[in-house]
Length: 126
Image (cartoon, rainbow, N blue to C red):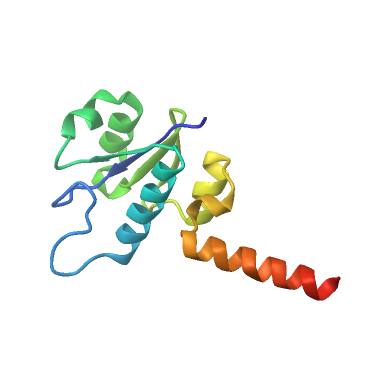
């Protein structure tokens, strides 16, 4: 199984989805990670505010931060290799980078709706 680690910029809380105005992109990422965890896929997230030491300990992340500055965050790594910087992985990125079915990112309601639609389409063809 692939290992994904996301190094977040400094945020007020571990997920960044707190405060008076919620960032929709951070909410999407938190939701995706939650859905993946329910499928047994763990995506680590490290917030610069809450865990700065891990940014220092990871030699590759430390070098990139020293060379490019904190504007390079977020940094996404898969299996120890940087695969994306300056923005969070899209849903398509999660699927491709983790080599998982796209259904892993869908809500249970969306999965049922897709199955129902698929069965309806198959019934019409028969």
